Length: 232
Image 1 (tube, rainbow, N blue to C red):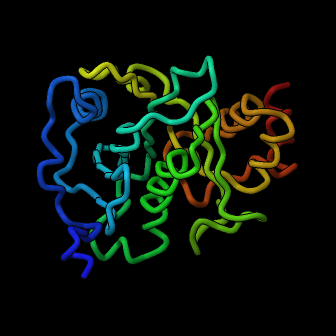
Image 2 (tube, one colour):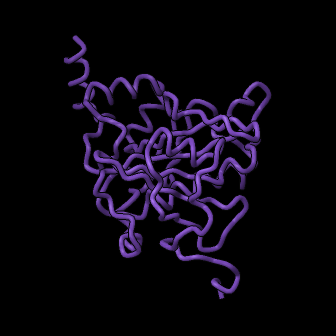
Image 3 (cartoon, rainbow, N blue to C red):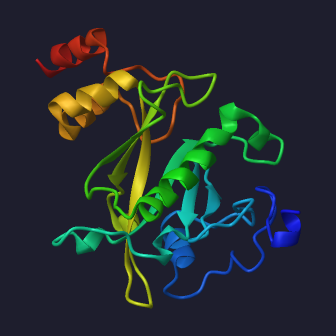
């Protein structure tokens, strides 16, 4: 029935979605990240806007990037017009599987599921991502994102550099947000002491942008002590 309504399996090729046109999102992605793989992960039942997830496999990581979120503007407050259009991306280990069988495994499927969920949220709720930081939790209290990790929340920060902003041929200016998985304690620490404090802890503990589902939890007191010792 779903196929008769135009639905596609998540692993199917996105016909007509991989062509890079001048001034398009895909051109911007390929210019700054590399060639987009022919795989386009589409919604089984397309919503409005329809969110597609593209993959760029590089030597040191795999990047998943949304398109479709910026087809419609988010509802932003006065003065925040620069954040009306957005797309999301996440850096995964280079060997992260994204094939048909892998997407049946919750340990591998959660980045795709959450990219799509977060991309739809502002449109479904008639809101926005909040400008410079947004945090999504997997329930309250937050539950692990997958069986093989205690990471339970996702922080969205504007992607820095030339990749971070795309000026499209139709006049839209799209802000790319990078997704950083967090532990619950890190989410709580960000609420208490702010985003900058949390980023300092990441830097001190050599935590980069590529997801590590077993990385150190900088929200725990013993990890914070190491940062203060390093800082001194």
